[in-house]
Length: 184
Length: 88
Image (cartoon, rainbow over all chains, first blue to last red):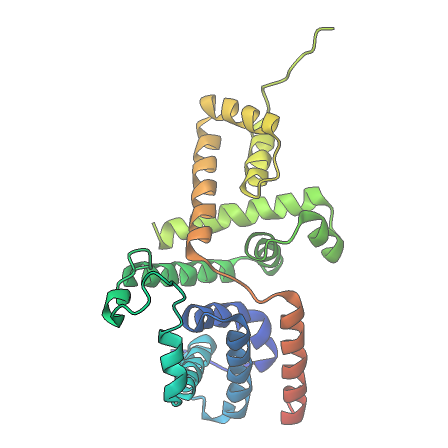
């Protein structure tokens, strides 16, 4: 098996979206997710010499991120009072005074399977995205995931709209094929 | 004046309209033309199906990205750390 090497110069470009998504599905707050991702990159940089080359860069960074997320929850839960406030922050006046147990099951809440499936789907999409040529992946991400207007993307990357649509078309075809193989 | 409406179009145009409609950027007339086209074109019909499914999956997965400003600031911070660590 070939040994994996670390290349921190490319970390941000290659893994930031994947790590950010991984975090946001666990902490549900953009600012906190951003901080955790940043801490992960810095921690990775510090402990580069501990990298044995057995896992890929991404797996290794995710393992650091997991520790960071656990640490984050430990930190906010160490204060008992805070945890209590979070549970009772239900403002619904009708159910006020009801037992806490009655509030636990929320029929509109996502089920565990749903969340799990969405997460796997997100991973599959990012895996397919990483297989695309760099330019296609970038434009597809800007247009589809970030939802930037066509005109803005054209101005930023200095391409014509027809050029953009050709790239989008190629990216979409490749993505659909890749997801068909890996997901459906 | 008699207006001639062109409802037939080549597959490349159909694919382009299909891509645009995934981002809600196609006009009503374009959508009508696309639907007329996929009535007789199996290839485009399959493409439309795959494309719609792709959009649905992306929506369902709720994937999100850091916005550009935050990404840049994170990049600058990391670049600084890289310099401090002595990595080019």
